[in-house]
Image (tube, rainbow, N blue to C red; front, side, top):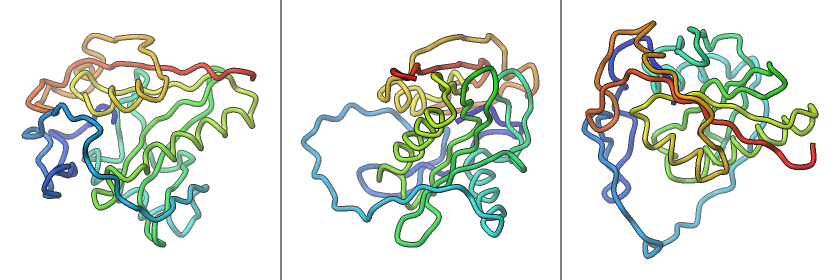
Length: 200
């Protein structure tokens, strides 16, 4: 959900109607109501990554972002070696969230969901665990960085109480040439959001 050092994102989105995988550039936003049927899904377990899972987590990030180095919070970050949480469904790696603690906050560096488990709540569970982590560390703020084209991420975070805190014009193109992102939108700017936690 952050700026990438390579070109456009690979095809890792899944159509909510037919289930086919969709190219990032060809994806579109749709308006839906609550009429769609709810699916019974297996439980999601979220925990710290183990040493034996590190390679699989890096593969997941690379598949989602096109690289394990991404632009976030005004710098190029290598996801290798950054602490991560993982989500597991049916014994499979369903998603991962890489984070750092700095500036008195938990910074979400990257969040990725395996395409097979998209739209099954994995991202929400990972985010909830990051918020619990912040509370355990007595930090009252979470921050996340994404790109101007990433409408799914902007929707996802704002639905969960995150508010826009800063827009950095050309914050991505400072490191990476502009390229086409979600729905054909040129990727140029970094958008930062944050959430304040009550009672910390």
